[in-house]
Length: 377
Image (cartoon, rainbow, N blue to C red; front, side):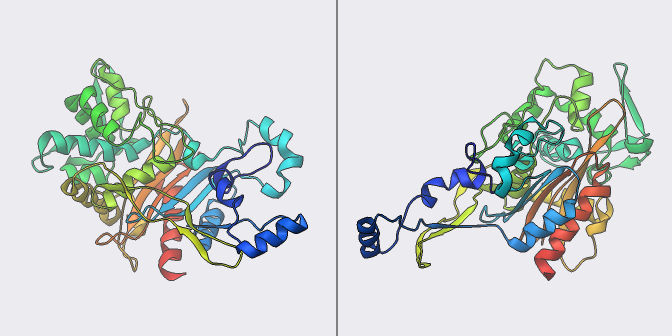
């Protein structure tokens, strides 16, 4: 996240380059330094990162590949951002040739903002919003899950072939029922899902200095098999952890996405404040009511769904797990997106662990550590 300033610039080193090279030292000192031929002390950039949360996220990810993002939804402050495998900025110059040629680890890639992953069942948040916009309510929805569903010779199974039985919308979401959402997608149609996805910034620019666009290819001409796959977060859809954090942040903030930022303040060499970043709204992604309805669905995931490990703590939480398959053997990345203190959300997290299995196996325990660190230190 900090990036580097050797062999080019990246991360915060790039974003804050102007401030770091600018000096607001006392003007008499500047005159003196100029007379002596000495450099003026550049300004200091104070990031929004909380060192405790950054450390917890870093240690919780361990030696696994993946990314962790934590945001303050009411302001857009980035509280933590970790990508692994990582690199040591202090030894970047001597390790540069090895780092740029190491395709196995891609250590220079910030997986949080530049990683492209199938969203898995976290995409059911998008599907739920599209359903709500078409129907105006989740009431009256009913589905009988028998563990698999076949349409046009294409079969979708629930995880481990689980049979969920009779479900309403809330239980289908909490159980992360693939069958329900696959069939739901065929009813909603590719055009409608595309529009809702793009309302949530798929195929769009993100409010960040360094990012890769998330991609969504479904449209009105897409066939039933691709619609079914896409509706459960597979198909051709790719998204970054930061993008999922931004969607979740908008839900937690009543539908309004705040401009995310990493620079809290700039101060001069004596500690006087030169500038402070003021929070500002970026865009309303959904109505307040839509955000509230999605929040209720996400609370159910924690209370009686796939993220119950977060239930019964000293804080409330809401979220969505995901298991994103990435090869023909069914191997999956582990996802969790969510937020804490549901009545007045404090922190949003988005976590992916490459090859971590189900969301509840690898990503949810990391979320638990972050929430515990936030509230209990």
